[in-house]
Structure formats: C-alpha cells, structure tokens
Image 1 (tube, helix red, strand yellow):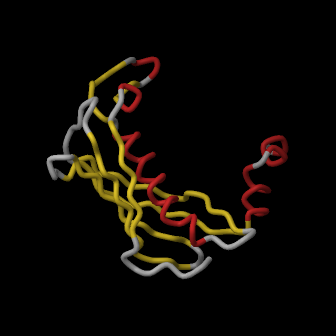
Image 2 (cartoon, rainbow, N blue to C red; image 1 turned 135 degrees about the vertical axis):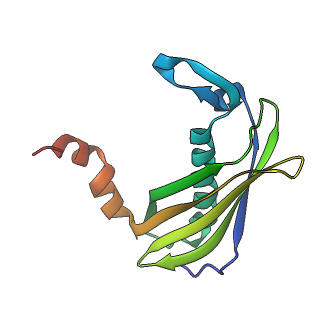
Length: 137
C-alpha cells in the first residue's frame, strides 16, 4: 500500500432515496428516514474511495469493522455529505473516521471503518467461489 497522509479525505455525496429508508423485509417499513444500516454502507463506500488510489498492483482490501452512531434523521430528498478521513494504518489495517452532515450543516452520523489490505489473491481465496464451495469441509 502506498503511503496515505494522515488527514487525507474522500467525500461521497448522497441524496436520500426511498431505497435508503428503514425497511426490515419481513417486518416491513418502519420509518420513512435514512436507515442506520444505509449510513454504514455509505461510510464503508467513502472509506473504500479513500483507500483505492493507494493500493498497489496485486493488492485488494476487505472490510473488517464498521461502527455507526446515528445522530439525527434525514428524509427522502435530503442531501448528505459523507466524509471519510484517514487516521491510522497498523498491520495492514486502515482505519478511517467517517462523518455524515446534511445540507443544513447538522451532523447526522459519525463512526469508523476498518479495511484490511491484503494480496488480491488472498482475498479471492477467502471469498471467491472456491471458498464458498469448500466451506464446511
């Protein structure tokens, strides 16, 4: 992995859609607001956006942890900015702090993500079709 300066950022702009709201499948729709699990996805996406330009040929990354604190609701049509900020890398694990703010300047969420940087062939061996077929052996 190429060096990443502490404080480097990546930004993901999101317009909240119906698909981003709380829907628990069998339990149905719960709230017509931006779901915490969608925020977690956007935090991971922003963190990956930050990391990708720093991967070297033959490297890949896989998420290992995400934490989210949902601070305020957002409704369909609201615009959010998710900012991922690099804070640390240890033993090939990249930690990123994430923050979601709305167009009014309110913090609507904060958290962290961690991605493990590994050889792409190792990730494929652990997550690819062959790994799926051989599980439980």
